[in-house]
Length: 298
Image: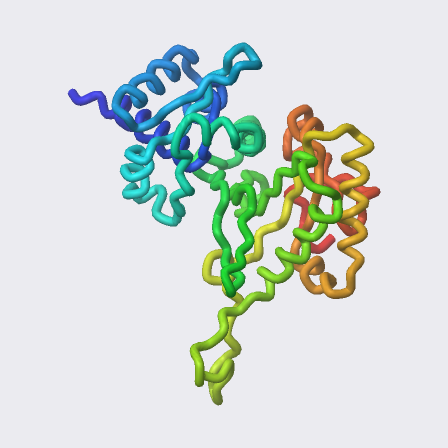
């Protein structure tokens, strides 16, 4: 018989690596095959590299960690698969030098996705490796766009199960708190954005409904917005949460925040307690701590 399982494992590995952009050997192992020995994952990655589908760099620090990414050939193949139908291929990491320059942020985003993936496994919820989609493009017109660090799909097992979606922003303290807080305004614009009608066509017509916001073509509900705060100590985390709170008090954001939960949590708490723990602080009420899946309307 054909070894179909091996082929499926190779396919999943390439799909995950193409979608995640970059991952270490250990991250890939935890994502695609946590129930087997890591040596099997190493052999699988080496095979895909020999076939020209993926490539790697070796970081000089951290025990010479190997970091993997898909080649142009690998991206071309993976982009034809139905499981990546809605996936927008990234601007390719052309060579090891380009990969090395963006490795830090990419690996932290992957680590964040793994936290949700592993938490779902522990809880019996549904969140598969390809339910974490980095850098999903959402246009705002005039060449502008909102591109979250990741889009998360997650189905809970409690109370019959409910589908949750979240935009995830991983902040590594590389920008000031005000620039971080300004992202609330960008997401509020996305929440309200409607594509302008063609010239000469009115926005409304007799007997027709108003044009819908663009996001409704993708999502039944606008995804909740999660800020994961990393790269700074407790004081820096508090400064950034205060900046989000100040931005949330702007009258222009009232309607957006009434419909969309906006939460922030330190990466250290996320990794220690798991994303489902009450480690998230609502932007409107940062003195409280709630699970990320808390009800939209308390």
